[in-house]
Length: 122
Length: 288
Image 1 (cartoon, chains in turn green, orange):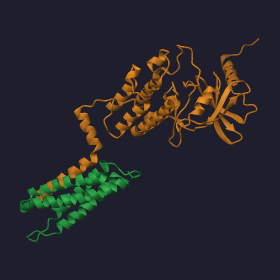
Image 2 (cartoon, rainbow over the protein chains, first blue to last red; image 1 turned 135 degrees about the horizontal axis):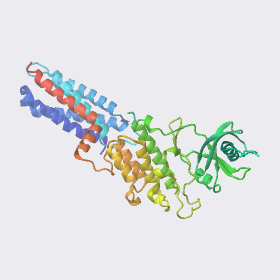
Image 3 (cartoon, rainbow over the protein chains, first blue to last red; image 1 turned 120 degrees about the vertical axis):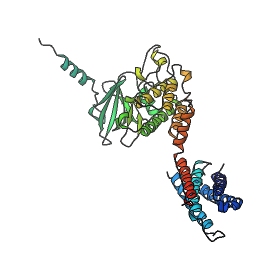
Image 4 (tube, chains in turn green, purple; image 1 turned 180 degrees about the vertical axis):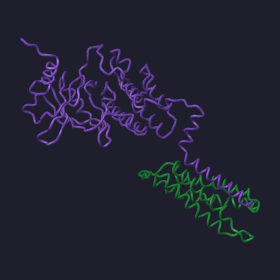
């Protein structure tokens, strides 16, 4: 399995789990399906990019940083969309998105086969 | 008439043992060490203007030099020259390695394992060349100033070129010698594998981790067929231990397996813990 594919799978699974935790927020419980889909899409993008990066560079630290930064950025875009009452869930979306991105970045470094000639930068 | 005392006799003997380097390009500096098959001297090579190590072989012909010279590996000191001294003894000249013996007390565990793996690499190479060292022990391992790991003293090595000793003749060092070798049987690569296990144990005098203990025990099995089949197999188990994967020599308990997994995935566990903390914090924040 290649690293982008591993990242894609990890991103979708973790995205779905992260999205499912919205169940604990009663205000958005009715939109759980959409949130899970959106979160899975977010995870998928992070997984693909982090997986592509992991093929080139073998470094857990850099993989985590890239995944976390990308997760934070995508979570920011999602959090920037206001709720029907005009409020924003900045912390509730961005913090977990940041860490989930980091986890996806880590997993892409650990799973899947690196490209031949990948550089090691531990 | 006066008699010579023991000290004078010992001095005369040591002087008589010194190699006669007349007519060679080498100047004697000092004796570096002495083994069962001869002595090694530090000499100055006048032509190349550098120090070198010159070994005078007490017994046998130039086969030891040929065997050592045939092994071209970063872990084996290269032979540059060889021949017969004016006093009739065989000699050969090697690169002079200004290094130190292995000192497990002052070396970190990971460095000791790295050194051990380099030793294994060298022995595996020699075995591929059908050469069995037969006297692997800490004294025959030198750590160079740049971290190089050399296996020295191939004087008793068994190779297709070397002469067979009379059956029953024992070569090696008792503490690191395989039982079958001690019994005078023909040495096989398994004898070197036993010695490597003994070296591994020696390198970790205290607190030898259970998987390493199992690796050493398997390498030192009394029955040669119970040992690792090759040095590469032994080295692979060490590599597995280094990256916290299960080693073939050790059947781990569920607790050991969990601890090993946690150690291997510490970063992942920390990230997951951070995620849970954030989720709990965010969940309870809305009640404030």
